[in-house]
Length: 182
Image (cartoon, rainbow, N blue to C red):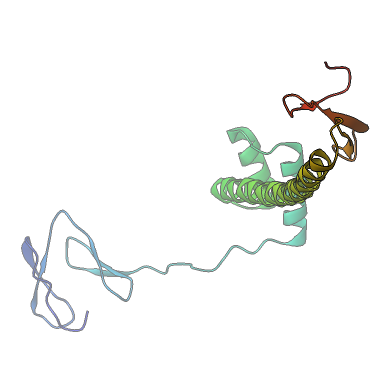
C-alpha cells in the first residue's frame, strides 16, 4: 500500500514502509491490490499467484485420455499413482478428470440435441404432409357427396411404411368406415 492507512476495527500496528500506524484486524487478513498480504503483525508478504494454465505434454495428455477411456472416475490410489507417473499433483489429476467428464457430458448433450432437432423436423414434415392429405381427402369427400348418392370410396396411404387403405363413407351417418367394419 502506498502510505495509506487501513482503518479497520482492530489494533494499530506500525507500517514499516512509511512509519505511520496501520489499523489491521486481528481476525482478518487483508489483501492489497498488488496481491500483498498484510499479516496480523503488519508485515507484507508477496504472494505470486500462478495464473498460468497447466500445459500438459502430449505424453501426459495421451496417458490421461487412455486412463479416462478405461475409467471415467478414479479412486484415491489411482489418482496418486497416475499423478506420480505423470509428475503432476493428485489435485491436477482430479481436476483434469472432472473437466473431461464435463466436456464428455456437454458433447453428448450436443449430439442428443442435434438428433432431437432432426427428429422434430421430420415429425413436423410428416405432420404437414398429413394435414395436406387430410385437406385433400376432406375436399374429395365433399365433392363426391354432393354429386352422388352412393357412398364414396377413398384410396389413401397413411404413411410411407403403412399399406394403402380404402375408406368408405357411410351414407346415413357420413362417417368414414375402415375396411372390415360395418
